[in-house]
Image (cartoon, rainbow, N blue to C red; front, side, top):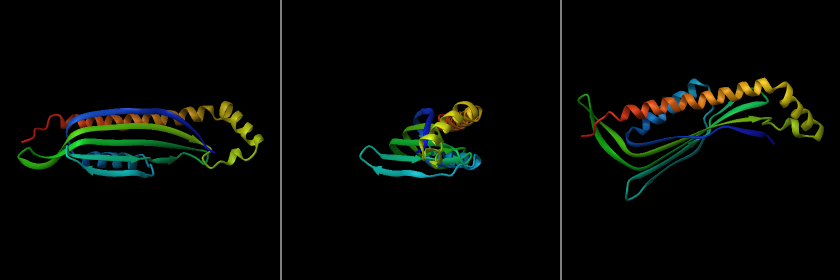
Length: 170
């Protein structure tokens, strides 16, 4: 069984106001393509209620660093009370959404994901010794990469959502 270490635990972005959900999706997709992550969609649901739409979107992109370690991101996006609004931007009318948006970002390092070093107790002991003394620097580098990826995605999403604050609805 693999060993997972949580590097960034649910870094939250909360936003209430005007946004375009397609642009948010596109930004996440572009980021994952740029960083060469394999995207796995765990959930993509949309409910329509009396107060508006509720959107729930969970993806877990994976990047295999080596045969021994891989990086996970978990992106949990939920939007509540979403209503379609028509906005005029620079004389052009556009359909956007208005509501409450919440994004949780997590970063996880998974080692020995193929379970090769857990076949016997001796292998498990050797793996523990190697992780502690030999691969320590590599593991720290991988943790730094995960932290940077999560923070970079957080900054890009925050910048996009901040731009929406200055758009006026008609």
